[in-house]
Length: 204
Picture 1 (tube, rainbow, N blue to C red):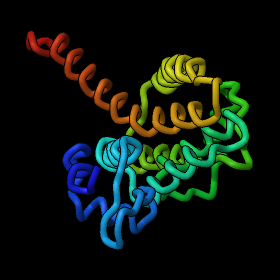
Picture 2: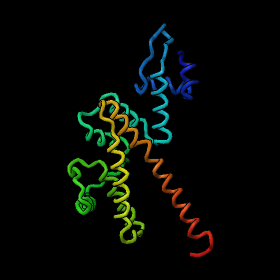
Picture 3: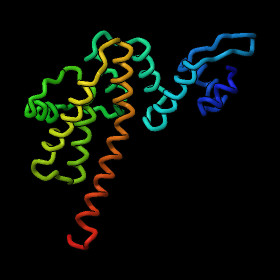
């Protein structure tokens, strides 16, 4: 298909497709002349992937490049795929002191890598923000989060495909990037539902 058809099929504007081509996020098509090329279903799928990562996934172009790199060149072990996914979705927070986070991980019995901990900066920053705002979680709430999120993570890890590295990296990276907005919205909808049940009658 020509680039105009690729644009229609993927719902991505032609100038944007050309930008992705220049940036190396989209592989070149098969050139039929000096100014024209043919594209196929793999290009459609790649454009839909990029659109999902930038849109619902909320990733920067640099993070999208990292995700695509992990898909095209999978890490050596399935465990390392999780690290690639976490690195892609990690924000810009850099917190030198992970003492509190590491103490919590030890309390929960988690055997996390304390030397290479891409998610620890984010958790340390989030906990510090709670402190700065004077927001104190009720007793047991953080433990409840850990219990339920561990169950979610267990279901996801158990479902990682093992037939190929490519299938595994696609599942882990995209599942991490694209499912986090789903989980966030489900939490907000649950808040709405439970709030309506508790407060709609006017009883505090």
